Image (tube, rainbow, N blue to C red):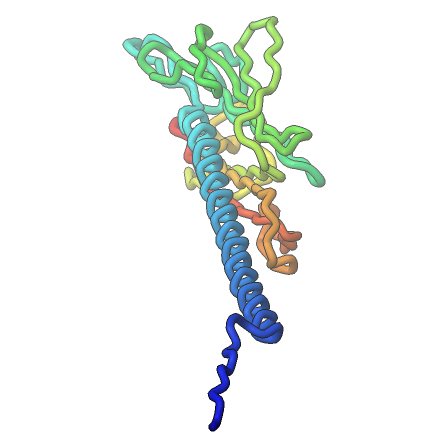
Length: 256
């Protein structure tokens, strides 16, 4: 008589199967983490780009408002001689468009504005009400790479310190579109690095538009370390693993 034998069947996994399972699981987790890191990097870069564009738009709108309104108008426009050439104010106290062209550092731009009750420009670069009829706004780049503005009113002895407008600005370049009338009455335009001196002579050059360029640099690290871009000075620069955006705009002076 044959006795039946109960054969014990194996239950569970062998060591090899367990190792294979762990390896596959680790690969899936690594792929998921890589996707997460890449997604976070893309999101951070996109957010930084959007922030830079918003900051640049704000700053350029602010500068453009003051530049386009630069010029001189009598507060009382009912008189027959309310229009004054844009190159000087009514009391000849301030120059309308002025600036400093720096070779190895950002430029400085000063915009003068005369505000009457009917002109509509009665706030400075910080949005504060201006009681004086004449005031200037000076734009420069501070040591912390911040675009700053320093307001000043004519005849005021109060010193106003510069305040930051937007961060991450590494260069500010300003050029001036200058017009000049020749003896035949023809007006010729040229682009200058420095604004002409104020003058009441109609034959002397005067500013008709201001070219503003802002170069902004982000803080997020990107992979295109050797990527090239054209900077505000017209040369080629390397991004150096940071996002760089160059914003250019031309503002026309209203009274010219």
